[in-house]
Picture 1 (cartoon, one colour):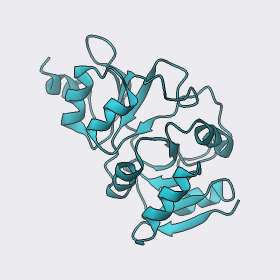
Picture 2 (cartoon, rainbow, N blue to C red):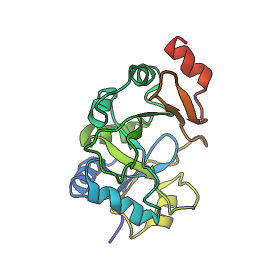
Picture 3 (cartoon, rainbow, N blue to C red):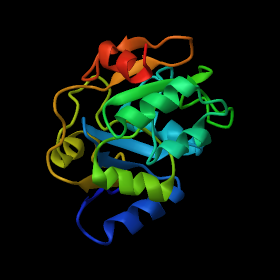
Length: 206
């Protein structure tokens, strides 16, 4: 496989990315935290190829990125009101919401009855997500290696393993997103990040 690198500011990049994704390919793209490696979330074969490209255990769930809060309804059949409120307050941004999984989402994304979902605060990737639909996206690195902050970092690790790298320059602020479980009566922080439990409770009025 030949890995192509295209500028995020090239008018041909978005159409090329959509063709690759719709044909089951893998695209590395910038987010507000790191460069991510993604496939269409409902394409089971493509999702499995993420694990192959990274050399990653298939037991680890892959987060879902969406382009708009209304897309929560595409990846979950019963979105908790807590999640909707937090999405309205903090998206786009570094907050991942754990919500019930749409049964149509492949087990390759998550073997659990829940999934983690967020909207990244990066205009390039949001445009792709709004055009392509929800994507399963994890860090664009070999398993166990350093998270990539540039397209060159991705190429150094995944050249020949993926179809396309979208180069938008350096990304990331050194923080992974806050992960909050929205399945119970109150929010539970599963991973600390830029958004604190105090901020989350304030947004929820509790």
